[in-house]
Image (tube, rainbow, N blue to C red; front, side):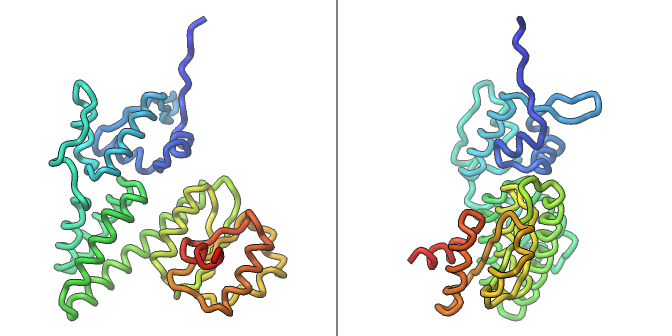
Length: 266
C-alpha cells in the first residue's frame, strides 16, 4: 500500500506554527517562500516539509534575519545558517517608517505598517519594530515629537483594531471579554488582545474601567469562555481586592496581563 502524505490546510498550519494565514500568504506572494499544493478550488495544502521550513524561518526571524533575506537562505544547496550580515536588531522597515513620519507622510506610514503586520509574526513586531520606532520618536524635538507620535499611534491603533476584528471572524474557542484599566485607545492592550486572539478567542473590549466588583454577579458573564484583565500600570490595592475575588471565582476561565499576574500572585 502506498503511503499517502498528510496535507494540512492553512488554518491548521497557523495553529501548528503560530504564523497567521495572512502572513503565510504574504510570504508566498511577495517573496515566493513556501509553495503549498492547491486543491481544485485553489485552497492551499501544506506538507510536513513545508511546516518544517516555516519553523526554520521562524528561527531565523527570531535571530534578526529580515524576511526579504529568507528566500536566499532557503535556496542554498544546504540550508544555511544566517551570517552576521544577515542579522539586524531592528527591522529594515523601521527607518522607512521614521522617514515617512518625519515628512508626515501618512500614506507611506500606513502602507509600511500594513506590510510589516502582514509579513512578520507579532513577537517580532513587538521586539524589533515598535520599540525602536517609539524610542526614536522620543528623541525628536518636542515640537515635532507630538506630531509624529500622534500620527503613528493613530495609524497603529486603527490597524490593530481592524486586525482584531478580522481575527474575530475566524475565532474557534468562544468569546473573550477583555477588561482594561488603561484609558480608551490603549495600543498595549490591543497588542495583548492579539495574543489572546491567536489562542482562538473572539475579543470584546471594555476599556477605561476602574472597578470589577459588579462583574461576578452579572449574568452576562456566562456567554464568555474567558475573561481577561489588562493594566499597563499597577491598580491600587483597593482595586486589586475585587480582581482577586474575580480570579478565584472564574478559575481557569480568568487570565490577566503580566503586570497584574505578578500583583495577584504576591
